[in-house]
Image (tube, rainbow, N blue to C red; front, side):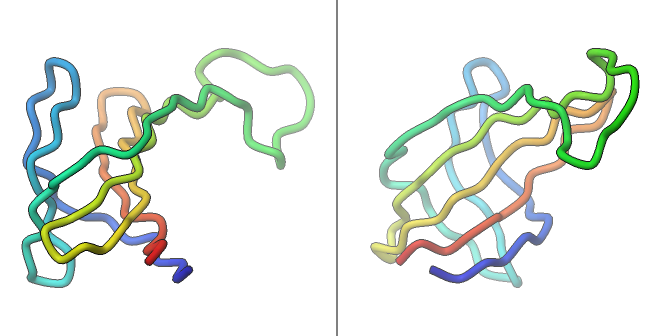
Length: 92
């Protein structure tokens, strides 16, 4: 496993998060299979005191297999009005 944690550009349909491809370090990876998905709405571990829903993570995670037979974990960070895609790990 390789920890990456870099913002990426993702080609997807926002209605249902149908991921087509992503660009990482100037190379496009075509998604052949979405292996698993889940959502994270937890509070950050470093947060203390009163908690509100605005302080939660709002992330959609995906484990995907690409046309190069590599497996990656990425997520969509939906904080406020932003929509940032992050390539978190290369799993194989």
